[in-house]
Length: 76
Image 1 (cartoon, rainbow, N blue to C red):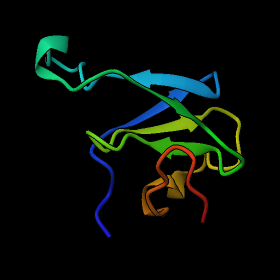
Image 2: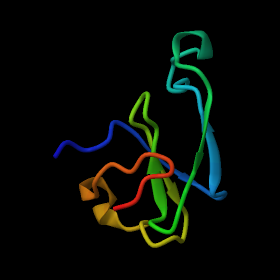
Image 3: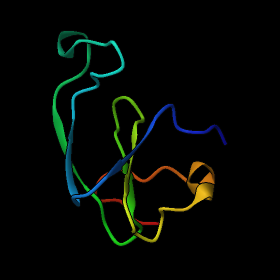
């Protein structure tokens, strides 16, 4: 399993991702999608694989990089 390319810790369960950031302008990203973090405490963007982790949630641990991909609405 390969680690996600970027992990962002967030305060809200609902997040938006457009693939921009770290020098990538929004025009070169992907369509904006809204993702919902469920009981697992994290969610992965289906376009860019960016991982959003809820701060203080069950997945906010050092081993988050080893957890499987979870797309919005999916379950383990």
